[in-house]
Amino acid sequence: MRIVFMGTPDFAVSTLVEIVGAGHEVVAAYTRAPAPGGRRGLDLVPSPVHRAAERLGIPVLTPSTLRTEEAAATFAAHEADAAVVVAYGRILPQAILDLPPLGCLNLHASLLPRWRGAAPIQRAIMAGDSETGVAVMKMEAGLDTGPVGLVERVAIGPDMTAGELHDRLMIVGGDLMARALAALERGALGFTPQPEDGVTYAAKIDKNETRIDWTRPAAAVHDHIRGLSPFPGAWFELDGARVKVLRSTRGAGSGAPGLVLDGALTIACGEGAVRLIEVQKAGSRAMPADEFLRGSDLTAGRVVT
Image 1 (tube, helix red, strand yellow):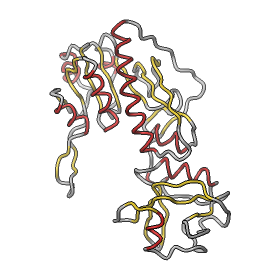
Image 2: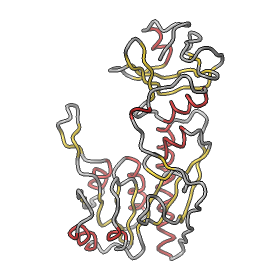
Image 3: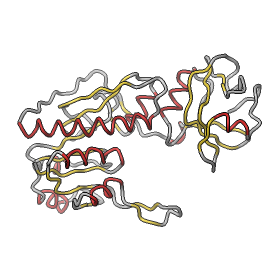
Image 4: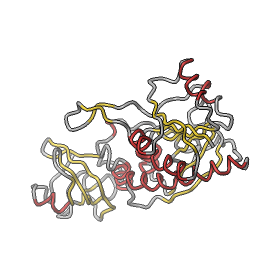
């Protein structure tokens, strides 16, 4: 089939590669325009999808909006059978959604209708979910409200971080979309409306919610830490400086929230305790907790905030 691909981050690249590998003709890749980056923030850095599309010889388009007659005419000129959208970052207006005769398919990183929205991977872990997955949905005007064609479930391990889950879902999702397109081409891809019950929204992560609240139960603190790892990172304050926590596990013991309980960096929570496994001081590299402790005076009896 002739496919228009629309995506931006690393998460979308696996799906693009799978589509090309399955023999479909990707006639254009829509993505975010190059953004300032590099060591000094002065270079214009193309998105991961932009770079991947260029390697694959696919024409790249970076429109600032799709809500113009010109944008619709450009899209129509591709004469695509279907569009595939993976974390594109822009809302598709109805004029675009109506153009491909076989529709616009979206790969979403959750078991819809749970965790519609911008941050489904992080929110699933932060909520303590034991399972998530990826879903192929036929897009409509609402936010992740379209009927679902295929789903693949993925278990969330008790210590799995958002980064690890991201990488797992990225691979599973690429394969799922390839299977969905094969079924679509045969006329065998059916869609089921999402149920009205069980809808939750995965709001974008706000920087104001990244600080660790030690008064919460240990399970919630641990889920908060791993749900924000590796980015943007949950953190606590020590001697006026931020310390990110990239990996933790449930610990033994109890005490006042924020109290360091032992020499293994176990910290008391509102209920129970967590043990910090990997941390990162501001301006430094990530390091194991024991290495961090050798360079600090964070001993048992101190309190972190």
